[in-house]
Length: 121
Image 1 (cartoon, rainbow, N blue to C red):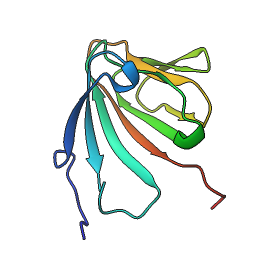
Image 2 (spheres, one colour):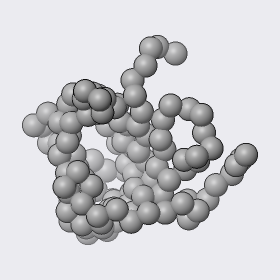
Image 3 (cartoon, rainbow, N blue to C red):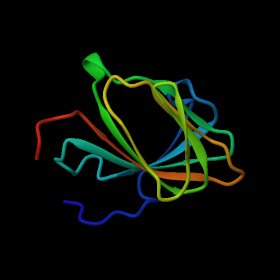
Image 4 (cartoon, rainbow, N blue to C red):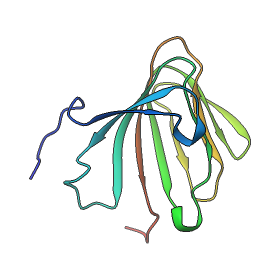
């Protein structure tokens, strides 16, 4: 059982996520160890990179939570643009079109948690 993991342990460079621009570095945590119904990653986007606009519904119903750690960008949610910076959190519920872009001149770093919605805790 993995009890501790460093963000350098499971790193993947992913080009064009949801047809976005550039490469997003994904730092995945406890991907094969946790039994929680969520995924947890740190994403890093260089200036100009983006996660393309997308919707999670049907067989791909997910809820996502974005917490911005460093840099600045813009996130779009259902046609509305939201500027994001360190300390901002954005939730993308199922069925809502969303995505984001690094609009700054340094790396945009964020924590991303996602999973299928379930009953209340």
